[in-house]
Length: 250
Length: 67
Ligand SMILES: [Zn+2]
Image (cartoon, rainbow over all chains, first blue to last red):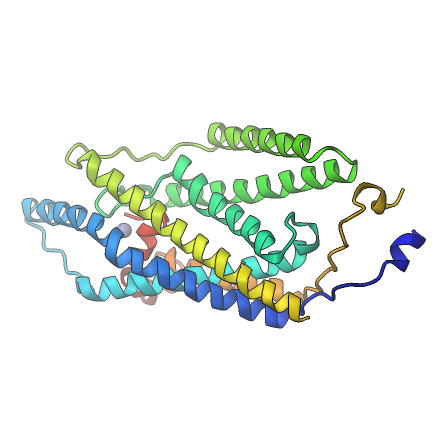
C-alpha cells in the first residue's frame, strides 16, 4: 500500500471537457470520411435497388409520391452518417474517460483503437452477422418493429458481451495470469457469448423476395460494412492521435 | 499484495474524473440519433416522417432496419 502512495505521479489525467472536444472532432472526421464513402460507394449499390422498387410500383399502377429528390436524399445520407458518427464519438468519449485506466495499450493511440474496434464489432459486425443491412425495396414494412427489436437486442447483447469480457480480462490480469492466457480466455468468452446471442435472438422474419437479385443485396451489404469500417477507423485513429497529444500536454 | 508485484514496469494510468453530465449527454445523443434515424413518427409524428425520408439513405447504409 505504501509503495503505491509513494509512487511518483508521472502523469495527470486529461480533463473531460477537452477530451470530449477531441472525440467530437474525430467523430466529425469519421462521419465525413464515411459520408463520402456513402455517396461514392454505397450509393452505387442503392441505385439498382431503387430501380427495382420503381419497376414494382410501375407494375402495380400505384403512384408513390417521393418526399425528396434523389439529390436531397444523398445529402441526407451524408449528413445522417456525420450525425451518427458524432453521436458515436460522444458516447465513446464518455466510455473512454470511464475506462481509460483499465484499457490495454501503452499510449492513448492504442487505448482508443481498442475501444473503436469494440465499437465497430458491436455496432457493425454483430448486426452484420445476425440482421445484415438491406438496401431499399428488400425489407417488409410490416415487420419493421420486429426487426428493430432484433437490431436493438443484438446491440444490447454486444454491449453486455464487451462488459463481461472486459470484466473477465480485468479479473484474470489482476490475478497475474500470463497475457497470452488472458487473451485466449477473452477470445473464448467472446466466441461463446456471440454464439449464445446468435442462437438466442430470433432471426429476421423477412425473406428476400425472388425478384431481388442476390448481387444487389450483397453488394449493398459489403458497401454498408465498408462504410461503417471507414467510420470507426477514421474516428479511432483521429481520436487516438488527438487524445494522445492532449494527454502528453497534461 | 501490491499491484507493483505483477506489473513492475507499468506506471499507473490516472483515472479521469467523468462528470455526470457526460453520461447524460451520451444518452441524449443516442436519443437524438434514434429520433433522426429510427423514429417512424412514434415521437415526432409527421416531422419524424420528414426526418425519416431525409435521412433514409443513412438509415439503410448504417445497417439500421428499414423498409
Ligand atoms: Zn427504407
